[in-house]
Image (cartoon, rainbow, N blue to C red; front, side, top):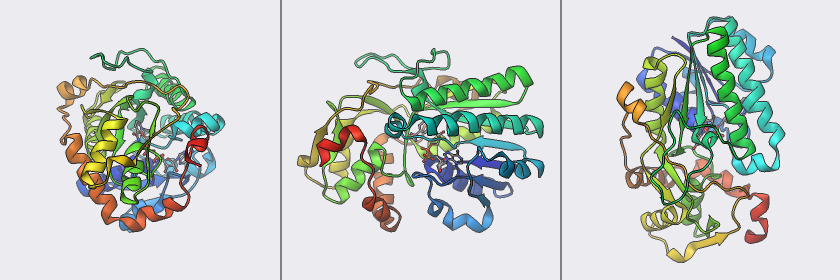
Length: 334
Ligand SMILES: NC(=O)c1ccc[n+]([C@@H]2O[C@H](COP(=O)([O-])OP(=O)(O)OC[C@H]3O[C@@H](n4cnc5c(N)ncnc54)[C@H](O)[C@@H]3O)[C@@H](O)[C@H]2O)c1
């Protein structure tokens, strides 16, 4: 099987490429990644000889075309601009990568007989849930994106569905919750808190620290995509969650406890504009139809993740020199 993984040098994409090498050693894997602030070629270094890697922006259609002309069975589309804070500062870039590039990939997939196009999306397209309720997002939840990031992901989901209905392209979509695990750049809560704790720096908690997210260990996410790609029904959407709801204060406390650091390292900072209060995922469709179940608790996954960061200092050290601080937080940390 010939498979194109877009965004395969990013956090989840690179974990998925490693997963494919291990579980489908006969697959011919091509990765396209423009290596933005989140993309890191080091994520693929150990398997570089075993895959075909191309560095370019997916909107450069002339560079993409020969890959499709050579024949592809599957496309798994991870590539996207993903940082919500960056989307507030520079939405244009998000429209290009998340919407325009997705349309180019869909059109080329349609025209070159791709057997399945799997689109990786987010639960952020559904908006926000109330704190203190048991409500959860599922496949029938209406779209209500709040940030330029989630709005562009919502647009791309609609485009993917339109190619199924209009052109009968075989597509599947997954909307997943917050991932954590190895190779995540310190722009998301788990790696930021981990690296701050390991370096005895303050753990900056947005707002009151009570916003809740569902946490999904990245290898469970890779298993879910494997199931959907190989066994999912064409045209269907599947919600993927970890079943582990946590707020910012809880995560800070867990990281400080696992790393044996003082709880005094917690620091509350200005909240993100339009910060959604709660996300939770009902993954029962994926469980019932394809047999998915998350394999680790948040506590176990967090220990494994912190262990990975402790053992891979050479990977994260460069990020400490160019730490990204969102505009709205600048005064708090200066
Ligand atoms: N990380 C999460 O918690 C999470 C949650 C829900 C959904 N998702 C979705 O999963 C996918 C992967 O997320 P991630 O956390 O690995 O993101 P990431 O930012 O770590 O990786 C994205 C990769 O895509 C590449 N890329 C972006 N635009 C590109 C373009 N125009 N051309 C070529 N390459 C491009 C980047 O260089 C980067 O390597 C995204 O589509 C995201 O929306 C992520």
